[in-house]
Amino acid sequence: MFFAILLVLFLLVCVFLCLLILIQSDKGGGISGAIGGLSGANNFLGTQDTANVLTKGTYIFGSVFLVLCVLMTLFAPGGGAAKSGLQKRAEKAQTVTPMPVSAFGTGDITDDAGAPGADGGTPAE
Image 1 (cartoon, one colour):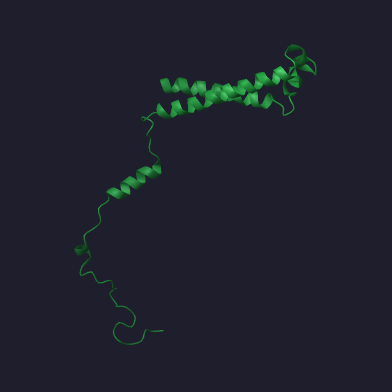
Image 2 (cartoon, rainbow, N blue to C red):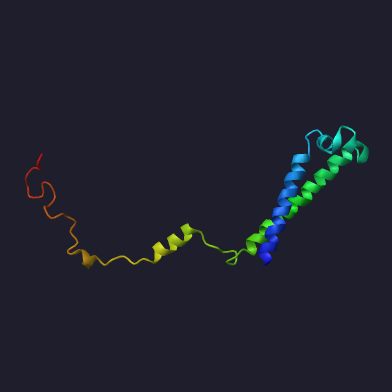
């Protein structure tokens, strides 16, 4: 339940952070065009104040984003230690016991016909 609340909060922060970043302009005029013309936001806050508010908002939402990432990792279903499929396969491979050597016979590695040239002759061509 707590993870679901964190997830909803995380999604909201992501949306607001994207909007804050997109509304900014590299020259400080980003919000003035979005609010309604060149003088709309400048009369309300001023050009420099608008940039400062957006920058502070970006810092705040970025920090909340990072904190929520850490919290979601800690409270993830499975105790935050959920194993990937690769980790599970590696653990399973480590628990497999090898077959004893006696199961293979004498331990000689030759096929039924013998190795080519094993009888002293030349291999067939």
